[in-house]
Each structure stands twice: as C-alpha cells, then as structure tokens.
Amino acid sequence: MMTFRGKLTLLLCGIIGFLTAGALLLIFTTEPTATRSGATRTTPMLVDVTKAESGTWRPVLHATGTVVPEREINLGPRVGGAILEVAETFTPGAVVEKGERLLQIDPADYETALQSRRSDLREAEAELDLELGRQIVAEKDYAMLEDDLSAENRQRVLRQPQLNIARSRVEASEAALRRAELDLERTTIRAPFDALILSRDVNLGSLVSPGDLLGHLLGIRSYWVETTLALSKLSWIQFAEKGRAEGSRAQIRNRSSWPEGVVREGRMDRFIGALDDRTRMARLLVRVEDPLALDEASKDLPELVAGSYVEVAIEGRPLAESIRLERDLLRMNDTVWVMKDGTLEIREVEVILRDRDHAYIGSGLEAGERVVVTNLATVVEGAPLRLDGDDS
Image: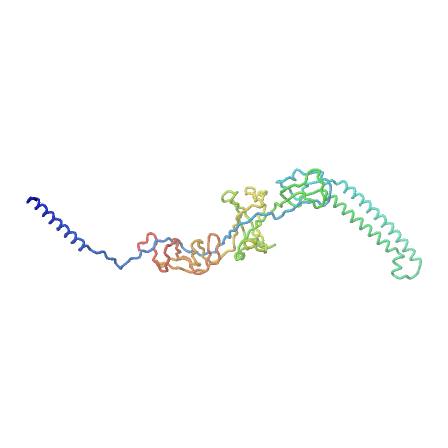
C-alpha cells in the first residue's frame, strides 16, 4: 500500500509536468514572425575606365608566310662533254658571285671546230675578193660592147648573182664562226647571279649533255616572304611601284629560331593577283634584301632560311582623326561601354579597321570619353557605375 509520502511526491510531479507543458505552449504561440521589407537599395558597380584618344594612327596587319627565293634555277649545260674541272666553291652550302667559274667541260672538240670555222671564213673572204676582181673585168667588157641590154641581162653580164653568192658565203661563215666561239665559251659553266649552292649533281669526269642537271642555285640578293591577307585589308597597304613609291614597311620574325625581339625588315612588293586555294585570301609578296646577312649593314642580323615559316607585321596606311581602342574593349555587335554621368551607356560605333591588337573607330565615340575596361556580369543600359575612391 502506497504511503502518504509517496502520494505527495506523485502529486508534485504531476503539477510540475502540467506547468511545464503550459509554459511551452505559451512560448510557441507568442513567437514573433519575420517579415520581408519591400524596399531595396542598388549598389553602383565598381569599374575601371580608360580615356578614348583621337589621333593619326598606323595600323599593323599581322600575317604568317613562307620564305621563298626570288631567283631559283636548275643549272644545266648548253653543250655536251666530259667535266674536266670542278671549282672548290661549287659545293652545297657555298656562296658564289655572279660570273664565278663553277665547272669546266672538255673544250678540245670545240676548239677544233672553232679553227675549222675560221678557215671556212678565210676561204669565203678570199672567194669574195676574187669575185670582186671578176666584177671589174666584167664592167670593162660590158663597156666595150656599146650595146643596150635589159636590166636582167645586164646583171648577168656584170656577174651580180655570183657576187651575191660570194657575199652570202662570207656571212654564213661569219655566223658559223660566232656559233663556234659561243660553243667554246659555253664549255665554262659560270654562276648566272650571286647565288647559294643548294645542290651539286655532277662530279669530275661526269659526261653531260645539254639539258642535264648540274646543280640547284638560289639567288641571294633578295628573298620573298609569300603571305596571305584578307581582301578587305588590301586597300590599307602600299605596294611597290617601279620608279615611284616604295611598298609598305614590314617586319619579319621567326619565333621558333630567332632570339626574342629580333626582326628583319622588308618591303611589301606586290599582290600576286590570285587567291589562296585553301584560305581564299589574297596572296602577297614581301621582299627582303640581303636575306643571308652578307653585307656589312646587316651582318648582325639573323639569316632567312628558304622554306621557313615566319610571322609578318605589315605597316598600313595612316588613319587620320580616328579613335584607337584596345580590341578587347570593342564589345558584341561593335558596341563600346561608356561611363557617362555615373551610368553605363552601351554605344554603337563605326569600326574602320581592326588589326590584331586594336580597333580603329570613325564615329560613335568622342575623344576624352571614359570607356569601361572592366568586364561586367550584368550589362544594362543606365546601370549605375562608380570608380575606385568615388564616395558616391
């Protein structure tokens, strides 16, 4: 049987539980409710700007190209025979001057032929002298006849046909002599121009005939860089005109083998007049003088190697009174972001020309206006902007 003390304890526990439950119910039913304020505040976006500058600029048109020799030939003989002598300079990689002897073909047969042609000429000249003597006798005989003859018969009596034949024989003998002299001269093979020997295809004792390959030569006075450019940009380039203006200046760089910052100077030579089959761009030639750096003025410059792949930077015609911007600041659809009166203006502009680094603007932007440099996540016309250090 529960005692009095146990009943009292049980009653107290019940009262405490009831009071606790009532307190919790009161707390949950009287908790404040959070509400959302309808008023918001827009913070101006922090940006960097640059001032638009107007002036006269020279665009630089960048391209790539291949180095090709301006002069390149396969050397061959014009007469046949055995090779008696090979010059020490006629070896791959050597540089030779115009007129320098490279090979000597056996001249014996041609010397004999030359002596024979000289003999034939002396014989023909002697026959002409005899005929001239006969002419004098014929004229005296005709004078003694005291008879009128037709012009045709008179020519026969005065031996005019025989004189014409004698003169023709002299002329033919002179021509044969000149041919023999040329053949003998051609037994010496000389460099047709200042050249780099690319290959040699004969040796001492080789038997050659006209048309055979003796070697491969490249002219060294100038090389071309064959490059391509969009047709729309040709109007900005000055091509060389004979006796008049020089072509636009160009800088050539071989990034794979030349030290950083080292370039060769060239001049825009000509537009080939045809499009590249693959890229459908205009094919151009840039001329580079002294490509092997043999002259004193260019001795410290690197050599151009035929067939190498190079970069070309062509100086264009000047653009007067235009705005130049970094190309990255020209946004989609030829627009520019301008900060004006603390807000963003999305300004459409007229782009005259683009090169690799810049865009040149003709209208739509004034000198001194502040162009937004920062790339914005949200681009809305009239959005508030601020600069670093701007209290507003």
